Amino acid sequence: MRKNIVAGNWKMNNDLKATKTLVKQIKKSLKKTKLKNTRVIIAPTFTNLPSAVKRCKKSKIEVAAQNMHQATSGAFTGEISAEMLKSVGVKTVILGHSERRAYFGETDALLAEKVNAALAHKLEVIFCFGEELADRKANKEEAVVESQIKNALFHLEADAFKKIVLAYEPVWAIGTGETASPEQAQDMHAFIRKTLADKYGNGVADSVSILYGGSVKPANASEIFGKPDVDGGLIGGAALKAEDFHAIITAF
Ligand code: 13P
Image (cartoon, rainbow, N blue to C red; front, side):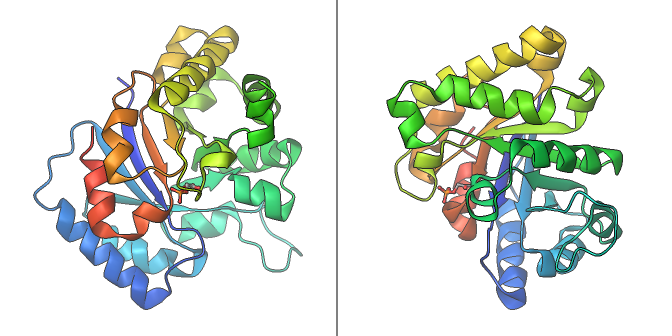
């Protein structure tokens, strides 16, 4: 059975002190919570990963990075490699976030390289993609999502999908307060699963967790997570408050 996942993408928020505080609050909130088939992941900034990993040991929380460089090492000033992430105990990396695509020019081709590098170093990948508002207005959302997935992932062998989580994040719903309706999320997630099934078969398609991201809040989480092809969420703003994050985790 595929896992439910609630992952908090902290983006460029929280210094070291705030990271320690928020980790402590989330740990406390989960102490008496029974997690049924659900993984909880947080993704703090690079500088705070070692502290978060240390504090989340022997807890229900896993720690992910928000990005990484595709090369193993070398003259890439300011970048962080898969090996460096592993060396501080990180096991998962978010790749392809729309903010990376929009502000840092990350293309499908580059993301394919990053995915390869992450998998080669046995990191799990949370792979993000999603259409822009103009795409949806032009009824092109499925074509856009299909090409993002195909271009960055469909060179992989079926086995690789054991280490891949998909995160559908429509750009128009990120940080805008505007959420995809549960039906819109379900329709797209079903389409994504069918796209996977057409290429790799039902076994792979049914085993991959597909998360929804974009203005998920305590008030809308259970309706969205209640849809059959939605296996959880990638949460931005609401992951920065322990109370809200906990309410989303327990929304299944
Ligand atoms: P918000 O939840 O703030 O809309 O952000 C979603 C997101 O980008 C998660 O990666």
